[in-house]
Image (cartoon, rainbow, N blue to C red; front, top):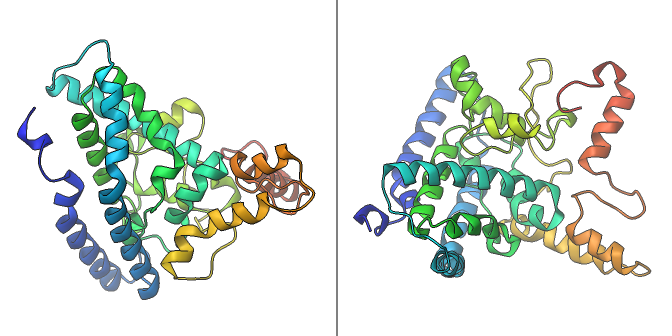
Length: 308
């Protein structure tokens, strides 16, 4: 196995670059007087969540690794590690990431792990560091198992996933407006990902891509950013706290409270865990689809537009 697959995780090696880019973004915002803003408590929470995520991954990551190695061991063929298989693995990892990310937004159990990343009301490079501490519980790793079963070595898979995450760091910014048209057509960009982080009705559940925005265009989840509907960041119902423990666990607490209400059927209890976020047996809350429908009812002129 090549030495670069046996050393320090590539995301750890990129940490100094992340710090430099954050400093550069802060300076650019101050000099230009636009391009986003920083709130000290919010940024500190994001950094703390990122550090916590790294620690948790170091403690329990072996479970995911063991699962992928078990799948690799029973793969009918074992592919060599070279530039061709590396490229193929990178594309498959990015495709799997798209579906994992889509699952995170369409099932409350997945959302409970992923909501952390969307909990900031600001959009800057520290937001990229606001990562979950409970990713293993989501079960998202299962979507990487087919790649190992195809014969791709788990170390190569992990390396490609690390590169995927590194790419995703830079587009958490408002400093950059648009990239060249050809780049916007193929790659995920700040403009595309601002849509993903926005809570405007038209932008909910859009642009799940990691590296290549082509997946969203192929599977019907792409929505372009509009100047006349500037993204508003945060959750549909914001937390109002910078407490990392609450940020990390609030949705699990909500699931427990909802699923243990008196008088519910077994199906309703299960739905509170796995149905789309916002599902409610008595209509007391709205899912993203219902939020969109309500918006269109109030603004019928926008009916049929992307995202609506």
